[in-house]
Every structure is written in structure tokens, then in C-alpha cells.
Image (cartoon, rainbow, N blue to C red):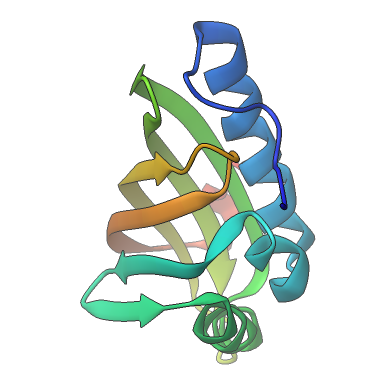
Length: 136
């Protein structure tokens, strides 16, 4: 059986590790690598989009990083309990026209006993910014 350490139940240390691993994976912009942190039948809500299963995750992330260029993400642990973690995040990117954005949001994560994320619910808002306003 696949396992992604650290495993639940989480401590402060292991929850922070899980968040950092997620940040590192997403910043790789490798959809396949990112998808391996999720269960085969993972359920996502990303903004108004519903995504089910690893194959849909890969398709979604492939499209995301084709339109969100020079993507850079920072995640921060907000809360944790047992097999759940909440994070706040911000990321920056520009579109093909060169307009920069900073996206802010929160995610709620639920993991199975093997450390794979079973559910991911993300609320995200984009703010247009000038290139000289970038922080990441």
C-alpha cells in the first residue's frame, strides 16, 4: 500500500512537515509528482471546480500551470487535528498577457491512514498586481 509520510494523527511538527512537502511539490509544477500525494479517488473543490481522482488532478494541474506562468507558492499551517490540516496560502503568477496576480486562499485537507490526501477544499481569490508589487 502506498504511504506518504508523515502519517496521521499529526503533531505540530508533522503537520508543518506535511505543509512544507505540499508547498515543495506544488512549486515543482510537476502535475504527476503532485498527484501522488492524493488518494486514487481524491475529492477536490478548487474555487468553483470539482475534481475527482488522480487523473483529473493531473489534467487540472497541467492546465493550471499552462496558464499561470512563473507560479510561486507559499503555504502556512493554520490548524490541525488528527487526520486534518488547514492551511492559508498565497501564490503569484502571471497570465500569457503578462498581467501579474497574487492569489490568496485557505485549504482544508483530510488524509487517509496512509498519509494520502483524501479531500482538498480550496477557497481562492485573485488580486491583480503590478510586477513591482511581487513578494514571492
